[in-house]
Image 1 (tube, helix red, strand yellow):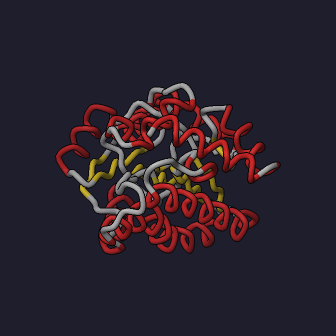
Image 2 (tube, rainbow, N blue to C red):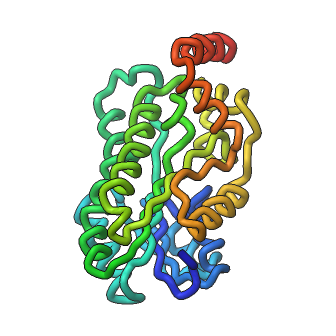
Image 3 (tube, rainbow, N blue to C red):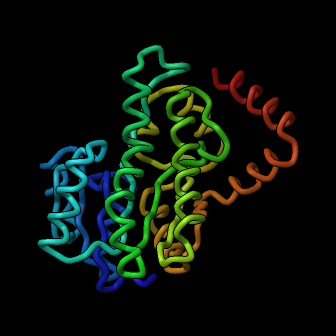
Length: 256
């Protein structure tokens, strides 16, 4: 799908990968709406990137997602692309507080589900639409450290797969972004998972990741791997699960 003239919403768009995506989309000629939990940051990011609108929205809320889409359609036009980019990295280990699990599930998974519920019927009626899920290499390979993060990123990948399988022949395109280390605030949190990510490979800049995403969307390619080594790790996991698990335990011992 070409970006020029398309209307796109980017959640978590005030910083990191989201801000880089918004800037790339604007440069490609898209009409962009940035959504972020912090309204002031969303407006500032929209102004700096050339996006048409910055909206404060909690993407874990179905009502706020509905309002975001309604404001976009009223002010700009029907949504062509939705970048479900907002995410949280919460909890350590098993995360004893259920609230951390609930937050991770709400933002990393159910926000995608709720957005799709609103958008997919519109796209089926129009015959096209594009859903881009920001997951993580943790969704393919597991994350050392936080169980809520690893489990919800697996679920995000699974939901993107399900969308593609179910609606891919009816005009709904889906891509799923699964990077390793990206130079964002989440990577600097000091958790064991962040240490493991830094040990596993190069840390990319958000702008590098955004370039990979837009190239994949133009090609309508499902799996987006800015770190090419993730594909090899994924193949090793599939070919010998026990050996891969043993290797992950060794990595955990190294960074703990």
